[in-house]
Image (cartoon, rainbow, N blue to C red; front, side, top):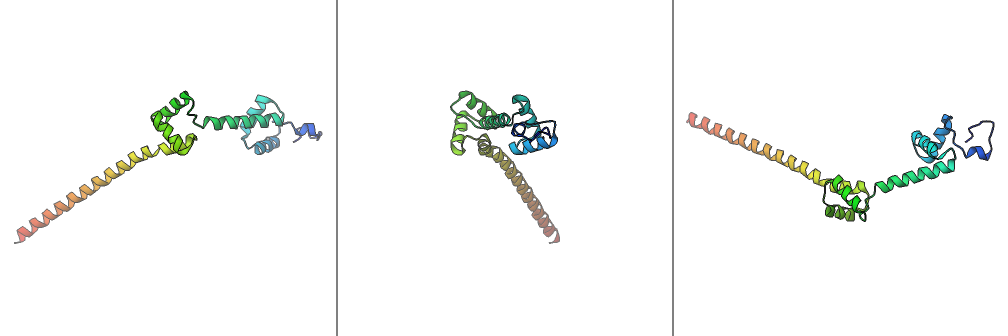
Length: 151
């Protein structure tokens, strides 16, 4: 896109002009990033569209690497074990079951939390049943008392 409307040559098309809103929209859409990330990339590597594209791809790759659990690195095993509040052995088993994605491992390990909630629901249901049973016992006793008085 041309930042100088008088210049329409190839050299100008390879540059990103942050001062033009339509160019920011265009390049943001082309690279599939927010305008803020585009501006940060231009600030980091310059106005060249090729350099900005390479920089953005590198940043996306780094973000993906951060979301993966590398069991070969002891510090990562320690970090993720603490994050998910599980033992390293349980973390390894979860990674083996669902893969290295931290989101998938987190979802796999989350049922432990859900089980606690289910237990609480079960307990409250049991309390309700006991309360209902007590009410029926009291009602039966009341009926017996009414029958005795009537006889």
